[in-house]
Length: 233
Ligand code: DC
Image 1: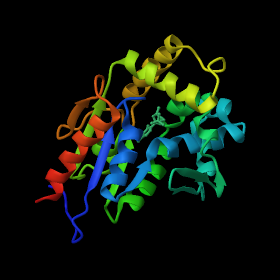
Image 2 (image 1 turned 30 degrees about the vertical axis):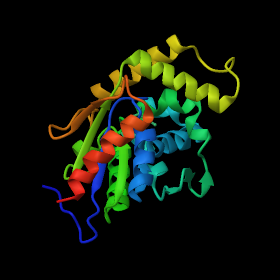
Image 3 (image 1 turned 45 degrees about the vertical axis):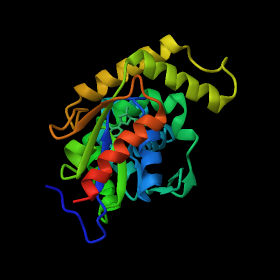
């Protein structure tokens, strides 16, 4: 049983594999409920960017514990849809392919997971949050009143990711092909599910939602109705 505070606000955990629709669903759901949206993938991406900029990636594969000084006093903050790393706006930089390629490795490191888990628990402490990631329902907030596990076909996820990248870059020549994206997505799913610390997995209480044939509106409405059921007690 989760604890619903006096304001009736709850914690909603949305987990699932890459490009399953988590962030779009979570963001719109938070807006509809008047909740705060927290994109925990952006936090792992920010740490990855910091390691890349420090030129540490290669060394970390040999000596993962060298990540620790980098985590001292790290500051990751959200302002609406923008993400700030140590006070700098990194919203665009954390979506670059070089970050996507290394984020599974960085997120497999225990010191990284420990510090981000603590930050996420602090951010959700007052409830009224929608948090998306891979381990929110299983590790960060196992007492979240509503846990959703979103899935979708790999080919559909690759098509969505392609459309999103083309829209963002404004030109489809600089974007990897749908096949290439599908291979990357499947590899990332495998890495995220196989890691030792907090692997991607569905909590037994989570409601599984397959978004393959659904529009964004349908996904949001479905999850919104589940949230209303939880807050109406
Ligand atoms: O959701 P995303 O693609 O932005 O996430 C980037 C990576 O961060 C993903 O490959 C796995 C990792 N991640 C994680 O390990 N735990 C989370 N709660 C969120 C993301």
